[in-house]
Image (cartoon, rainbow, N blue to C red; front, side):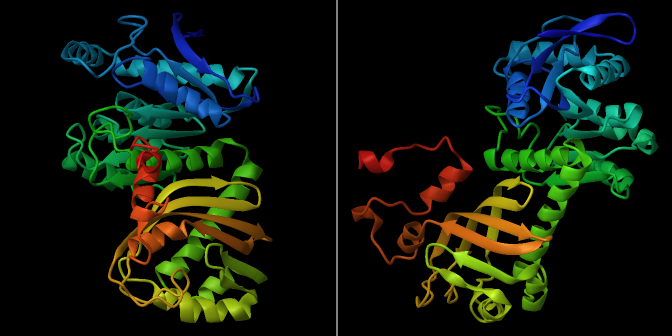
Length: 406
């Protein structure tokens, strides 16, 4: 815990987490209504593990110092709501800004500082962006944003908002107001999660959804890296990430072979590691994409993002790939007639870039899992698993070691 000076002569405590390298851009983590509790400290530690200097200020200090509660009891909920209702919102935003300035001057910091807020903190992240211009800000399911949309003109730095479609604290009318006011601002990115409820990102909470939380965190991390990690590096990462997204769009959305090839260098190669399908160079890849890949993709094919890592010259995408085997798929199941079986399998793509275009793709998946799911091998008699592998990627808390027990 450290101490930060407020703008009006007071001082308040904050939890500070430093990256292993001892240096990095700053993140101010803005609390929920439960104070600087274990979840908030874990968020700071997570950002520190990814190279940020993270601080979570005690924003209830003007009412009560050291608030540290959970969401597990009615008494804690009641106290949390009382503190929330008694909060001087303007002062809380000023204290958040003081935390930003603290990190700007911190010897471990790079001078660039963003903010990430949850619930109460999601609203404060919005207000901080509108009033004090941090380098960027992210708000998760902010409560009350619609009440201060008249301040939208003050947003002069990038802002990302995650909105839960089923959030009773931000009902549909409020969500519509937020979209109507902010969607036209090129600095603002809004992500909607139609099936999620308030606090879907709070691990262990009633509405926690691991897959939605992971997707939101992935989006936030990419956004924060882009705007805080340094202009040159961040710009290069964005170019690679956008080019990869463009390539995937041409493969799966517009289904255009020539546009796909335009994103690739002339001697690019694709290697689907488990079955060694793909091709080397535009001529082989043109035949592969136009004959064996794009037209052989089942209509219900979907990809659920799990993680993305962007470096200086490559992108690593982890996802769950899902389809119903209603068409020949020679790129994954060469020579196998459609079985009508549903398949869900973890898949990893490692994409290397050269001169701003794709140079190669290494694509990995567990072929035994695919074969088990389409009925070509009997998983009951082999040390392999079927669709359970994908489910455990999406929910790591599912039981482990089941094959050993069998």
